[in-house]
Length: 103
Length: 411
Image (tube, rainbow over all chains, first blue to last red; front, side, top):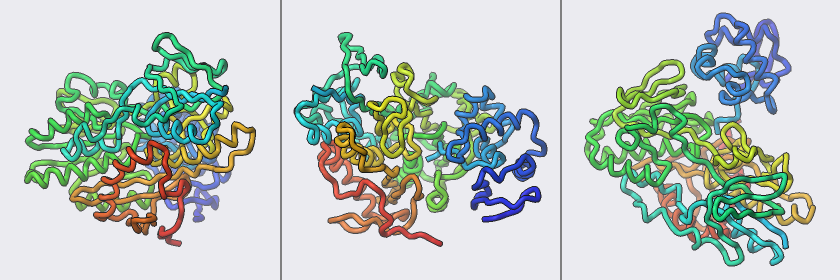
């Protein structure tokens, strides 16, 4: 599927995740974050988003456990930054696929 | 003399020993190591709390399944030393040199990883059904339980047999209806997932089924701790779920020896190639079954299909030839839904569970993603197949790789 986010035309799947992570921009991240109920992305949010983009494998975002271990941010803080399902939410904001942990 | 050492005599390890003893020449010595002399039919644990199976249905001596020509050593494993190609055992300070190593040490529940879980209420108001002791204790408790809020909680994924929590809830619905007390029992499923199951089409079918059975789902619930006195689960984002009886699926982790040996990821699973099971770091080490960090279900059927691919590949690999088969992540699971019925799902790395029919030679097609009595009988018959055919590595008329035959796709 194709949709427009932050003035850009991008490819997304049925759940609204970008399917081509190279189409991602910081403006797209900000707009998806707002859709996810996060009004503003703070430096703490960006730290997680950038870490996930750097550690994606085959376009898939890391799992929550990998994020907390890799960034030193606790699970509790992750839930405060990205409420409800943090790993899934970060994946969508970071323009990545859902983590492969859930099978 | 070439040496193959297999660590773990569960479903995967026992099958590997049987398959390879038949195909490898006599100049190969095969050693199988496990800390226990007992083999458990783990899919049967689910039925024990409801009195369908008892302990004797799920336990046999491992030696019954070790073929002649394989040495079976009962000992805890101290350390794997991949640089020296050696395994150190706890018993008698013995060590085993290997040319090739198969790690099949499985995955285990770790209630100690969640505060409040394995404390003074463990096996009083908090139970598990992933161990024989847990399932037996829960069976005793359910016989006298007067009703209330029964919460099934998955701490985190991945877990062994990801459909088992749903099966437990559907069997509980049946069990309490049969006993005429369903109106006094609330059934709740608190899961870290956003829905009943991981894959969208199956999640939709299964959540409809849960709704019909009046089983409530609490999604996106990631438990941080349990308050065993106030009897509630508390999540990382301070949501609370109260219970009278908690059936927990604790965090699953691979064996400690994997971590000690520096071979594991953060959950002690061994990184391997998802098509061939060979370690990217040590070309003489393979990991099979639940011990492997693979993006597919941790399930006996996966172990079975994986071992079929591995065993045929291995004889080529040791000759320096290319491995002919590429494993596709094939899983095939019966989902018991109570009242003598079950569903069947069949999927792999790329294809999610779809509705349709599953062709089974000699028996006929089974329905996919839909309840039927035939699926239930399939599930019960499987115990016999497991003991008599599967573990011994005898051929089953099931293809190792997934087939699209009979599956319905929308486009």
